[in-house]
Length: 77
Image (cartoon, rainbow, N blue to C red; front, side, top):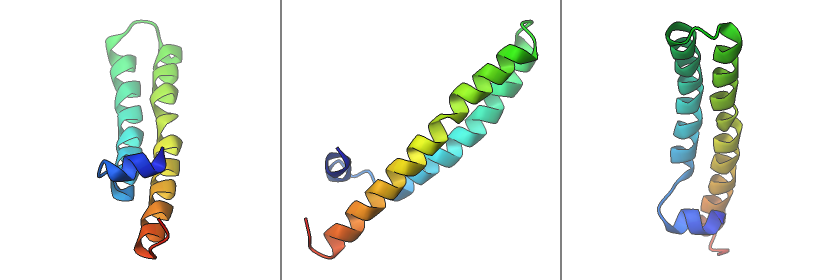
């Protein structure tokens, strides 16, 4: 899967950027839910945590893609 992502032109920097963007989106989702919904802070917390859980996945993909980039640079794939 990582090799296919790399073949599609997705680089580690893209995954890292998506990870940082998801952290910002987590804060934005929390604030938007807190202000727009009358369900209270519990629902806002759930939205913030839901979006915030994406960041580790994007960072892990970034590491895997970086390893693929290094392997390609050394001519191993």
